[in-house]
Image (cartoon, rainbow, N blue to C red; front, side):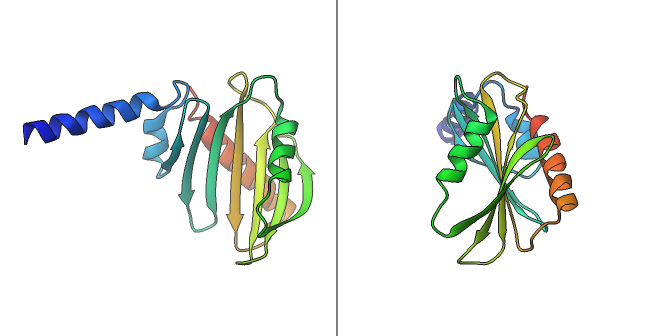
Length: 152
């Protein structure tokens, strides 16, 4: 039994050290997110709420910029997503997609400003209903405020 407990501590200890040093993993988990991908330069966590499915990625891209990251995401859209428009607000570059298979809409927003050099925040925000401009701006502000607080 002691060996099993020790083994679990070693595994969980290794997992905690695998996360990027600039991410507060405990705070992410406290806010009901699940860690999906945990690499040094690509860290993704997800959550489902009554309003939306949210997937957040912190990506390290040296020498890039937020607009380029947004354009890369737009150009690599899955076949079931139809690109509708790009919107530019004060905090993020936003791409709007319609889901051709399940209905609903997906909004991708990439934060314009980075708290950590070369670390870009990309959010997929999937909803059943199309958001008005005001609803979209509120969602962008709410999610970015939350996820930026996870950066050390």
